[in-house]
Length: 501
Image (cartoon, rainbow, N blue to C red; front, side, top):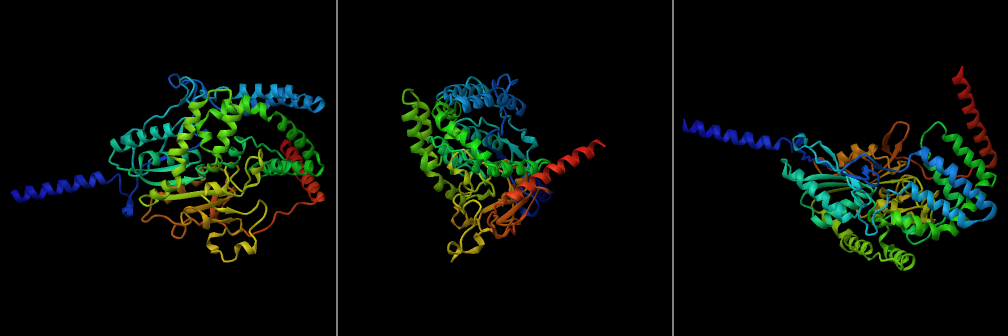
């Protein structure tokens, strides 16, 4: 009888231990943990009052912006073109921008105005398992150090209220900065794996340019950006060919040139009256100034433009983030790589915002590839690496189109590149995140199901191994541009009249 009771006791213990392990271990003894998604700018809804969340803070909708442009901005530019009244143009642009984005600004010390911010609801622990995907909501205008503290509380809640001793983090864009800040402040013990998808950790070139006062708009930059970000819609060919016609006729250079001339004159006014009061109060934006330019940007903004204001508090917070987090970022990332899983996803094939001289760096239409990959070398826009550059290189690190050299990345064996996918197209990489985070062994470019260099097919929404051949962009002849425009226009007319029959 005693032997039977002892046997039953042992059996019950085994069953209890097994029951506790069920949520943690999946088939094939692969350890899985709840995944926390830490995304970027505009990923969380912000409210003017989190205690009474009825009014949200968002970019004005398209119709509102169109009306503002039609009623205020275009007439102001027409008047400027006629009489060069820069003061009138400045007054119009600053008032329109300040009205449109009035709820976006923080206090001068970088803290949210009133009770504005995001609402982060904690998940029900009973609903969590190894396949859970949880979205961490935060005020993306805020201080990365404060956001990381909130993320720490969130992680501790999950660990304290479930059978899990760790979580996984799937980060994107600004979320990469938040994740790095968390690691810097709270260590590595509670994070099993991290995906950095288009991280902004190394900064954004045009953000650095803007905060150093270097604004430059060219017709080539604007046209290239517009064509590259049209996406797949029924008017893509017509719009693209129309832009070609404008360029061929010299009208784009005339319009953009006039605009650029106005911007040169109005930049100091816009900078002080709109850019700094609204976006300059975001500590998150300051965290996106490239590390090598932060001192220059701080001097330009606080010592030149704002020398008559006491902004020592927000400047101190910016400097603290750089001292605590940014200056040690490489050691932090390499240190985590020794104990946890790391994967980096970088996107390329597009230009970035055409508002500074950095527009022609290869990127994902928002952040440059050299930054999101932690150090890849990229070829000049519209070109590819020369034979001289490639001599002696390990070709497994060179993209098939010879525009990316991954050998110089911080994690060359754990960095995947996807061509033709835009920065904000996150949903297409979610499956990839899961596969990279959880597996029998840590994923590398050599042992995962994903090729080091892939390409996104927008028609089928699929990602597959890239086999693009290197080729220089060929400029269409004027006759080809005219033919493309007429064909696209004719196709639309035929479709329109056919639809009415």
